[in-house]
Image (cartoon, rainbow, N blue to C red; front, side, top):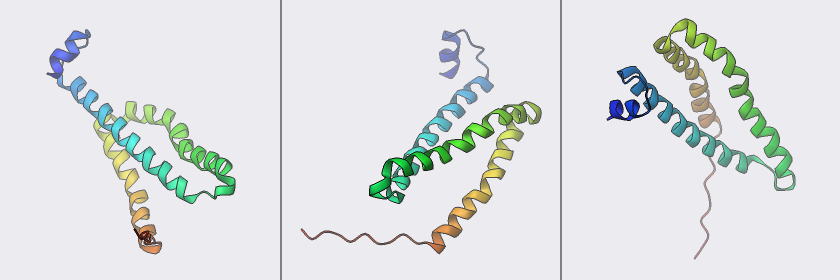
Length: 117
C-alpha cells in the first residue's frame, strides 16, 4: 500500500521512504498528545489571577528545547545515521523519564473530592 501511495506522488517506493512516513506520522501524533498533556498540566499550575502571564512563560519554556535542539539534531542525524540517531535520542530521553518517576513518587497527585449529587 505504501508503495502505491508513494509512487502516486513520484517518490521512490522503497521501504525506507515508507518507514519514514510512518515515523513522521507517529512522531506527530505522539507530539500532539504530549503537547495536550502539557497544556493540561500548565492549566493546573497557573494561578487564576495571573493565568496569561504564567501560561505564556511556561509554554515558552516548553518550546525552548525544541527550538534550540532542532538545528543540531539535523547535523547529528547526518553524521550518525538515522538508526543511530534514533537510538541516541531514545537514550538521551531516558534520564528525563526517570526524573518523572522520581517526581511522581515525591509529589503524588492529590485525590479529587467528588461533588455530592
